[in-house]
Length: 627
Ligand code: WT7
Image (tube, rainbow, N blue to C red):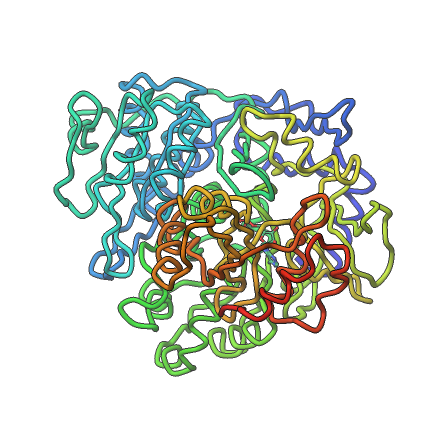
């Protein structure tokens, strides 16, 4: 897309929204093409988000069947194993057959349209197959990232009342085995309603199998047919649930539906990455996160792309791994997270320069703000100053990309996600919700709906409204702070709520606090993020121990391990500081602003502490800063 086409598209959505959005839907194969296009209101009365509401389609048909005639023998998924010893190509035909088989296995287990299926798998092709198999029979998948702990798994299974779990014996990442089946077994002690666990063999490790509940997929699929009638789905029928952290309470089940989600995922995959038929596209995200859903599986497959699925990590066996995989599979488009770029940048240029990367055409970044230094290194060293960088801003809630520079249409500024895509209406507002104009900073809201927007918080529609639409009446609040410059470019400055972003993983500070106070030694805890060179943000915990407990280094380490086990390794605290007291207002509210300043070591800026119930606690916290 060039600049004129971008302007024309922006204008068309203004002048003829129905026509624009209707045309966009034509990129999919519908069983019944919708006549109702957009029916949305962000206001409490009425409040609803519906897209293409009378359309009928099936996501797996759009990702598989419709490509068979022309591209049946084209590779859909290139799988690259952790060790690099195995790569396996799944053509569209093979993926279609495997999907139908798994769909038939699920059906045989009694799974029906609307049932929730939990998927706790590593980065193996069977994960995409399991997702597509659910889509084929109208089941709603809930993928849980393989880094989550048994407790986190249990909470997610209970929340959506899922009766069936698909997992693997073990995962493999960076040469280390991840005990997936063992984690599921432990989780299921809290989930008596789960009737079936399907186990895929990845490492062939010996795992205990519970009679009557557990079965190996290899056994279940024996003799199963490789065709399966797709379930006709209404555009607004649920496709998947994905749990994500917010500023309060338990993780929310973000619900995405069938038609609008696939329109937006496939449209943005083509537009943002300028995807051209036959190209190899590699998004390094784990399918346990939304980026993997939209840009490893659904977007690329809907567009008949060749999508690389990588099981491993950037620095194993060597820090050249990413670049070697690019050469091995002749990757044209590469999409990764700033945290990976920063960690590889620390290794210098040599591990990159010894590879060719000559096939690369475009680079992408996602998940957190990218600092200009990392952006420039990515552009100059990885892309040999030849590949544009798309810095894509979006969220689990938004389904797919919202804002990015478009090569050819928008000039790039390192660190800016440039401008919203046609149809996405950004606005900056002040704390009272008053719209701000021109070059300024404020809270980022979106004033109108787009097809890929989440539809509800699973099982709690009220929470959906309250979380996103009540702060700035009738507008979707992203939770992000943002600056707009004199050229109208947007610069995301990070979350303004109590959500932190650690290595591109989203965490609620409230969740970590609740894990900490679950430890018998802890009376109270307050958690904040602070700038971290590689991870973007680190986890800083202020912990008040119970009166009879002695603060020791051992206990400090124990609490870090405790959070790892309660939530998952990626949530492990960087710093635990024992605090005899926390700074509170006279009404008992913890002053997080002060804690953030202490964690950031910005001590000259603590602001007014005179309103605190006990101003002396701040002196102690400053004196005993950890790090
Ligand atoms: C939060 C959403 C985007 C899908 C993966 C993460 C931050 C995301 C960018 C970017 C600056 C970004 C925001 C957002 N974020 N992309 N390009 N520049 N910040 O999805 O886990 O739902 O997290 O990630 O703070 O709100 P998520």
